[in-house]
Length: 269
Ligand SMILES: NC(=O)c1ccc[n+]([C@@H]2O[C@H](COP(=O)([O-])OP(=O)(O)OC[C@H]3O[C@@H](n4cnc5c(N)ncnc54)[C@H](OP(=O)(O)O)[C@@H]3O)[C@@H](O)[C@H]2O)c1
Image (cartoon, rainbow, N blue to C red; front, side):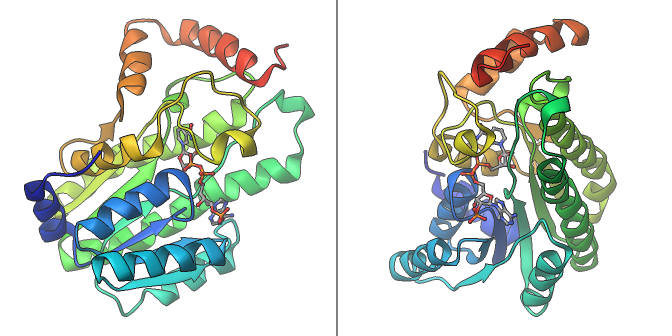
């Protein structure tokens, strides 16, 4: 799915000339970077896989003649986050998209606590540090956009992925609060809360998705929603899942998610 020319102009005028996209080596982050490169943004792309980022940067420079810089870093580490903010210090960044993240699944009591802590560092701590940094920078320049990756699992507890869902509840709540705080300062904040998407996510989280959207189908809808509300549910499947359960009480949604996630992880009880 592509953006119209007027939408590309709107994004570039409000949030250009430079954007930073984390998690750009694959999946949703990569597809968002694709759309931004096509809209004329200069990009800083970040993830751990230097090779994937380098070939993406070559592709953008050749295809769109833009400036793309690569910064490989592990954002679950404080030094990775600090190296990224130092790397972009002299660039006129107006848009921050934080798509680096991953999930875990299975029964919480059986989880590897080191892995859960690492996920917390990446999904929440790096979100805190980077969003704080760019909130201040964008407020000072009186213009900017912040896109955080939440999920449909953020809106209720999810047995069999309890901790992952909790990390996304953190992201969702932060984005909703900051949407109101930063709006008067010219800074737009958006939480993107997709349903299942085909990407590297499923394998890493060890979940099997029966039906899923393609990341390229949700990238443009996410960017289109920036500046138009605090949360987007991108893609038809996401909307079906979210609005289909809209009137269901939260306690009942937890039970539904227990069944769904139990099937997806084949670990059930
Ligand atoms: N796929 C879904 O069903 C789904 C649904 C809702 C929300 N989400 C959320 O969407 C975001 C993007 O996920 P995705 O579906 O695009 O998965 P993905 O294809 O696995 O992409 C994840 C990205 O994060 C990067 N990353 C992982 N660990 C990192 C680390 N320690 N430091 C820096 N970068 C790291 C990965 O690159 P490297 O491996 O090169 O570091 C990759 O670029 C995540 O926050 C996820 O929770 C996904």
